Amino acid sequence: MQHKYDVLVVGAGGAGLMAALYAAKGDVSVAVLSKLYPTRSHTGAAQGGVGAALGNIAEDHWEWHMFDTVKGGDYLTDQDAAEVFSKDVIEAVYELEHMGLPFSRTPEGKIAQRKFGGHTREYGKGTVERSCYAKDRTGHMILQTLYQQNVKAGTTFFNEFHVLDLIIEDGRCAGVIAYEYSTGTIHTFHAKAVILAAGGYGRIFKITSNALTLTGDLMSIYYRKGLPLEDMEFYQFHPTGLTKLGILITEGVRGEGGILRNESGERFMERYAPTVKDLAPRDMVSRAIITEIREGRGVGPDKDAIYIDLTHLPRETIENKLSEITDLARTYLGIDPVTDLVPIQPTAHYAMGGIPTTLDGECIANDQGDLIAGLYAAGEQACVSLHGANRLGTNSLGDLIVFGRRSGVNAAKFAKTVEYPPLPQGAEATAVQLVKGLKDATGTENAAQIRKELQESMMNNVGIFRNGPDMEKQVGIIRNLKARYASVHLVDDSERYNSELIETLELGFMLDCAEAMTASALNRTESRGAHDREDFHARNDEEWLKHTLAYQGENGAVRIGYKSVSLKGQTLSFEPKPRVY
Image (cartoon, rainbow, N blue to C red; front, side, top):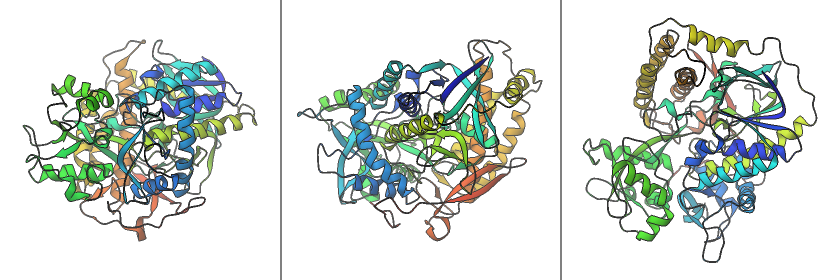
């Protein structure tokens, strides 16, 4: 079955819906493909807020936000991207307000703002209220608002469609091939422009805040085309996930005054970040927590967690401003944050790397900066390198709305200037063979077992602390798992809603992402941001102030290239300095 649209968006989270909405404003036909019903997309799990220098509570300026973003990214952030973002996110927040997003309010009726990790005033002199929030359900509100606006704009939705291939020929994207869950049929989507916004790949880890659907499908498909993935070694572990489960406890908890405590009740972050304490950037807090646990000051039966303490906060603050996390703690742990300390541990949360793009969302094809005409990416799927080596809290939702909008606007402009590219003969062949190969396989391997081994080994060997021998070992583990994956066997042969087939397809994509990530991390012989190597503890700007580009090679090998870091913004620049708080 074939479909034809001017602009096609893959993914219905915040970035995809923002891109679709602004493409539709460009007076072109727009369709969105999603593995899920749109309002179930993972953006709905984002709790804390959108960072924007509105200055509603205290003095604030976009320049300060830009500085925090660059410093937070350990100076691997592209400063032109940080400047565009820090300016544009202010307007984007007001746009969401005008669309009807129900932000929490100050007594005067302005958008409420609270403190968040790594966000400071006067270039690091103290903390500042910058996060614009809707209680602790900000992502959910963004998703609902943008979906309503897309319905109003006439965007067409194809829900429960799984993209299996990109149609790219001679440097030009002509659409995608997708599998429909409800029928088991393959569909061709012909388009003038395609925007990839399908989220990250956190399911490669055992403990993660990511939804089951975040398996890096489009990153893997891009990688299989011989195209690069940028900065895959930089993966953020959020410091506060519910112990054993990984379910997120928003940084807004610490923004409201929550305190991290070890077994003796000590507020240990005073030792690691004496100025901002519990509001240090996420990578630093996660390492501090793991250090406390390693040194025997953990809590719980296995001594592998730390407490977050809200008991000194007013009940009204906990019940009203933090209602979702309160409900999660009560439901999943049987603990009441009003009266009890909540055990938490770091959880795999966010990919700083992904498909390399320009500031306009155009996908980059190689080390020389050539582009794939008609192909764009936004959100966690993409790497415009706003986040560098470590993303600041709240900058993910800001990224979605700023670069989702830019991608949508530019894709629509492009689509209005070109004709539909011809579809290559046999465009569906790769996707058809991918599904057929799994269905016809007669091997003995079990996909669920391979997935379990992948997740456990990635958590152990390419987690918060890393070293060369462990990552060398992980390269071999992934190579072995990929070989076993080639002999996987499916039990379910049904055509409709074959979840075993879908999860096995996703496993193949996850293995690719893990391969690129591990090779990139092993190659970078320094510590920077979320990439912390015990055998190369120092940051090395002389050798490593550059972006990694990972290309799929032969027999499990990964070819590494590089891309320069943009050290100058449009009007403002910050020289790399030691990163202390």
